Amino acid sequence: MSNSSSITQFLLLAFTDTRELQLLHFWLFLGIYLAALLGNGLVITTIACDQHLHTPMYFFLLNLSLLDLGSISTTLPKSMADSLWDTRAISYSGCAAQVFLFFFFMSAEFFLLTTMSCDRYVAICKPLHYGTLLGSRAFVHMAAAAWATGFLNALLQMANTFSLRLCQGNVLDQFFCEIPRILKLSCSETYLRGVCLIVVGVFLAFICFIFILFSYVQIFRAVLRIPSEQGQHKAFSTCVPHLAVVSLYISTGMLTYLKPPSISSPSLDLVVSVLYSVVPPAVNPLIYSMRNQELKDALRKLMAGFLSKTLNFPSSAYHSWHNS
Image (cartoon, rainbow, N blue to C red; front, side, top):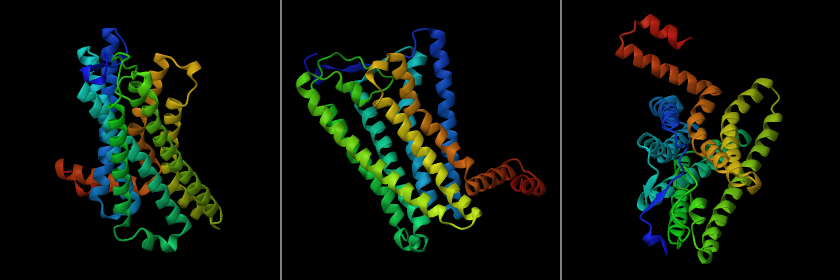
């Protein structure tokens, strides 16, 4: 294949060639996907329906759940269909769309996590200025900037990747279309051009990481100066979920892209890619709901109200469950 225009499809990496294991993979991914849909869907619905949660922090959390739904929906349905129908092929345009969407959602999520660290910094370190700095529609503009930056970054990366000449076949050693895997198929004279834009993306991610790190250093210093233990616990409780999500996002990404080549193998790469592309969107709602009492109360209220209306629960049962 002399160039990318002669490639009409790519071949993805199959988890297994055994039919029984293919079906097991399908049901496993289906369970994870449904859990991600349910968890993120409940977070989105709860925040949208409860007026008490219409604050910048929960608005950012709603956007995070939307991005998680988008990223996991980009990879898992195709992988499940491949296992169910025993196929590996993905069209050239389908691969380009998957690269763009996945990079868009993942980039926008990292930029949004950076914005959320700014929100926590202002709320804890400069509480008296919180209404001024993040009042009105400022937080909406910050979230929109995260989405727009992710979109532009993904557009540049996708356009750059698929403008390269591909002369190393069409087999991708990954269960979904991923930029580093496609770069390995490019010709030697175009490989460096493809890597350059990747380096720019990594540099932007590093800047975001430094900003998050700086924010939390200042946050922890401010929290430790709070005189009451109850005040410290309340401040930490609003930061721990975000910090856990950031840690999961960064650790799985670093494990994927920065692991030594000496320990690389197709099976290990497959497992690691699942960790960073599938696990975070599925567990993020659990991380936020476990340590957030306001969100748990709002979710319990929403579910109790739904059951009372649809199943005609008596009022006493409704209040008993809501207050439990």
